[in-house]
Image 1 (cartoon, rainbow, N blue to C red):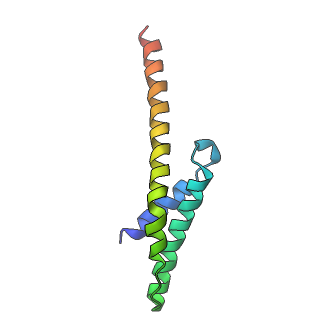
Image 2: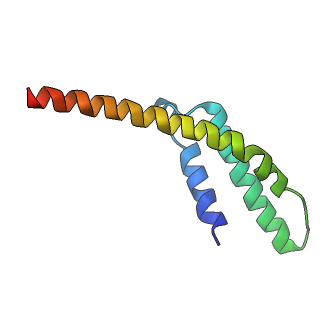
Length: 91
């Protein structure tokens, strides 16, 4: 039940434009993860048991590391802009 909302989030993150600063490798890994989960679910419904979920287990750690680095970079940039803006407003 939690799989398909996670796939939707991965697809949304993969669809971010390049100007968002999320690397191409991270976006590609998001598509790979989403595709692997959807394909695994479809094959399971058909009755074919495949080890496709291993792809998710192998690709997830580097994906989440890159995603976390991007989120950290975005939050630091926004905090720096907000603090500069609040200093200018208070002066």
